[in-house]
Structures are given as structure tokens and as C-alpha cells.
Image (cartoon, rainbow, N blue to C red; front, top):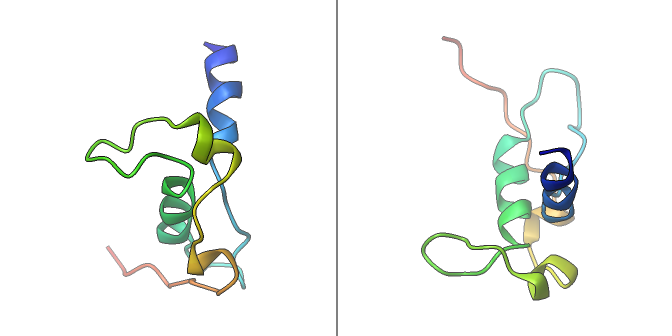
Length: 69
């Protein structure tokens, strides 16, 4: 299980929020999907894992304040 988690970390990309309390989850999802295939299930792709697709959110802040529950 630990090895599977380590392998999966290569397909995850994250950004630090611009300020405390801001949520970057949408950016995390978009950046992580850029490391996967473009099929309906976003299958693992060894090519995109090493050469992720261009993604605007990689360089543009995309923080949001989560709504109150």
C-alpha cells in the first residue's frame, strides 16, 4: 500500500494558497488531471506523468474562499 501511494504521488500536483483560509482544491484537481489521460476515466498515463499537459492554473492563482456550511 505504501509503494502504491508513493507511485501515485508522481501524478499529483499542488500549489500553496495565496493566503491562509483560501481553498486551492479546484486547482489541485485540474493540475493533477493534467498528469492523466484525456479519456472518460482519467486513466493513468506514463507519458503525461512525465510530460503533463499545459494548464493555465499552473501559473495563475486560482484560490477561492469556501462557502459557509
